[in-house]
Image (cartoon, helix red, strand yellow):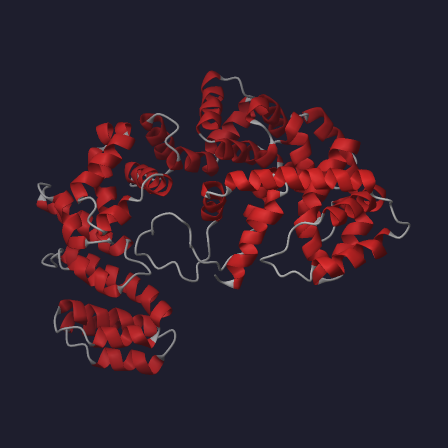
Length: 499
């Protein structure tokens, strides 16, 4: 396991486990560069190396782990220890010195064996109660102190908010750890959904502090108090706050907002801002929480006339389904299911799309499976009109096959002729796109692969597109690639581009 993943797991189990509400903030700021080693079946062949773990994947790892119940018990145990330490602690006159001594012992354990210290939390609680700004300034003094805040601060903040109110944390809304404090305050306010208390805080904060706190409400406010956060968003003239809240709450939130927009219960000016906001369009596209016709109409109103909104919806819904449910790409790749079986199962899960836009759904499933096995995926397009079949296959070659074995891309092209100008142009566009990505990823090894291709149109297009890509990194290799091109049309293109 990589060092970065060890750190990530520390943030999403021990650190985060002290208070499950802390997950929202930590996951939103999780370190990147980790490997996807979850217990789920392997994802598609796409090479994710170097791209880091998406926030959604981290959250899925934590929530889907078999150890969640164990973590909950650990939370309860740690909380009990914290409460006991608070009750028994003889508060020292010099809290900073005492905390520094405890910290020296705590960091002796490495990241894998370290556990939160109830004594450190108790000392932090008393320091924060007296001078939270001073404590946070100390936290910036060195790596060990910063780590101590990362592991211990939220239980301290949670306890302090309960005892003295979230207002007691306000002095911590400055410096490097201000976002930690803002999340903790928003979490405390969100527990009760007290808009009046939140607005009362506004007058005592700077504009930047208030905006940092306000922007966390979407993550911490309960769905049961949705009408109150709507009032706050309207008062602040912040449609983005309400849209973010709706996006986090999912289908219930989206249906609620859609109903308010439909029945005129929202302030007219604010409703107009919401309706025109691109985020609402993305919510309509990315979640099957509204009727399909409404989603299509909303996207068509906001896009250009040639926009394929049905295709966008199909892409969003199928991608989300494959992410949340069974990994049908994996099943297809390992011959646990054929293409027809995958389409049938996805159609069952997306019945409205399957009924009203079956062609768009079929095309999207083909796009997903073509990367795994182009020949077997083509079975989905059998029986389709030839022009439509070739257009879909050509589009897949152009828009998919990024960051995977270039041989798979080449195999997909074998199913698409180039006997019309439109198909020839589309093929070259696909080569240009993939060569740019592959040369950046594989460097001169990609040029070597291209030069070893058998004679034919694809080798010619590969040489041409690889030369274009190599121009940015290795002009000598680019010149060698251009010198091997024999296709007259492509040679003319090179000459025209270099005039």
